[in-house]
Length: 160
Image (cartoon, rainbow, N blue to C red):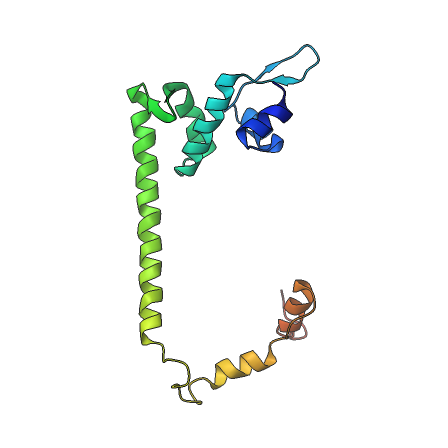
């Protein structure tokens, strides 16, 4: 099947399919006309790529893993132990990212817990916040215009 039909059947854009080919994750054959020709097996390969991407693996790691993985009824099953270090390393990387996110959430929870409820704060505590809010541009204008209006004036002769 050609790329348009393959894209419809997999739900993956043609651009992304070309990227997978560029990264050597997918290797469609070529017709004499030069058009890519995909097979039913390629559908399973794309499913595996999507599954591994969703698991947090990057395309370089996936390229190393794909030759050692078989599609076992929708479950990607490694068939060679050589992939274990890559899988373990990726799992450790994800564990570290999760730990950082949990720490960030804990920090936000602490800030929320100690922030005064609306209407109970003292005006002098919030004067700076109010001044910033009053000076902020209200609606309209492009992001560039809003950024320009928020800039601090340069001091003559100062370096950027």
